[in-house]
Length: 281
Image (cartoon, rainbow, N blue to C red; front, side):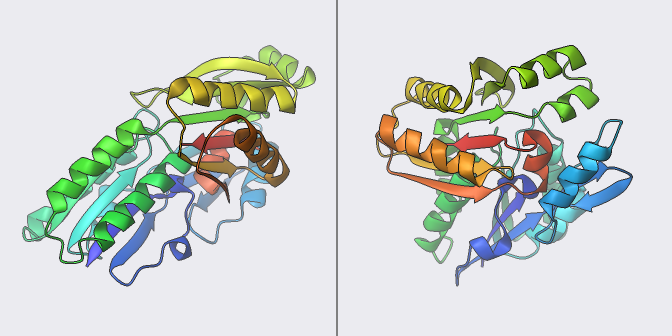
């Protein structure tokens, strides 16, 4: 049995990937906010999480899964490929690598490949779906190393761009000065940032108003790579209307193949906050 494992920043639920020959497992991160611990599994209610973060006067925090949690997920298959959120943003990649070592010590006949997505959300969805397609084309698992190599090349070609409207979490965690956050919000200015090749975050633009923000995003996408035939995933944090408008702008401005909209799970909601949009392509 092929096995795909991802941490919960991928914004997919288990029911989103069904295959007779490929098992899919997500390993949840944990979020601490408002005196509560939220497990980022399929039953987490994002509005409840956001409300707790809003009411929390101090900083909220996240905790990555343990190596043991990854090892248990690896045990669900014979040949496993694991994707994690960017190692520049979280310790998930290191935990997954340690989990791989633990698992293979007791199961030397199995195979596990851990890939740092150097991103999150939609870019991970694209990686997972590509992995599923390659696995289903090789039901006997004869080309494990070749598939891992192809997925690493595919990862290097992925891009991420996102925009924020709510800066409360950044302010509370000391990543933005309160005066700056208040000014941006009062002026209706949206920060637009990209994921770098190393998996870090870089602010590249500020736009006032929704329409200018969406046009800034499509301009950044066009400048980052040839988007002809690209598959695009927009993940939104409680902002389906904004995601639809951004999709319309993309279809107008770019020669993409498709644009799909998904809701953020807990971890990506923690980073994006209300109205945030994360684009993987």
